Length: 408
Ligand SMILES: *Cc1c(COP(=O)(O)O)cnc(C)c1O
Image 1 (cartoon, rainbow, N blue to C red):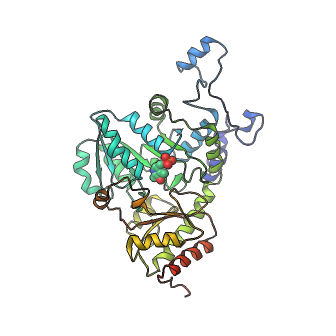
Image 2: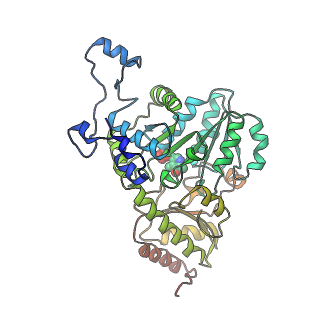
Image 3: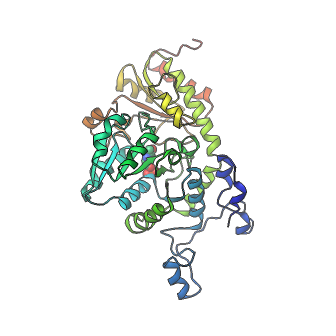
């Protein structure tokens, strides 16, 4: 159905636009059609039986696969350098379907201590109800993880940069440690997108995404992606999607994510440039106590970030002089920038993780795991940078904090 052999040495922007689809297979339609069908008719009962048995190629029922979804899966798998992909209804569906397919009672799952709030709650409170043991540890200090790896985890899970405070985890190192004890290494690559980081190329086995964020890119859908070996993806499709969660992506959302992918490379360049400019602007402001952004010169993990990412992404986290109270006043004083969770949208969004995305951690857990109560998370969008800086400086002015030094 495709002419992917023509894409041999093509770059990621080209591949995100063309891979996995040949208009000639669909009456010349330039844009992939949306297949709105729940089931598929067979010519004969024999064909039906053979298709169910996997002896004959073809679709059987919409919960496991749909042709619009299949193009999306091929395209993301290619961008992430994996053999196969699976699209689901949300990022949490992708994460839970993966873990519920691969872990069994008695297994140990080793998880970094700072991850997306609902992922944290799944690992801390829910998968544990089924006899899976979960240990949280600080993956930014691999030397201190020897004892945890000696317990032979079956699965290892982390995000990098980690949501919300942008810690950077050494993907090559953790993947090596996982493989040395026979564990699969799973990376949530939502904060980077495959345009700026490809964990599988660095040694990870499985990549998961909230496609709600950069991949969709327009804040108008929920979706999730898993990429890995063909064998692993087939297992997750059959168990995690088809039998356990039933969290199928709608064909319409698969279409919208395909549309988003066409501009992913362009959008990531703009997100990264604006976020770096804001991070630099903020760190020159005496009203800002700390700025956390991977590519900011002087950021603690900048060298590691540069070794595995080609840009810093859209999220800039910071702490203000005056703490949480001042952070909330700052959020309220912004006009163009909206107070909302999520990231990767055209609109710049701001939120207070301790009270919003990471309220699933208890206050004691946030303290133990290093998630500051006063952290403000800014997800930089695609507006003109001058307008974003004006909004930010205007907010500082109205809450009575010092304005940035560049030019007065
Ligand atoms: C948003 C997010 C998720 C969850 O994805 P949904 O699409 O909202 O279910 C998982 N991981 C990270 C890093 C996220 O930012």
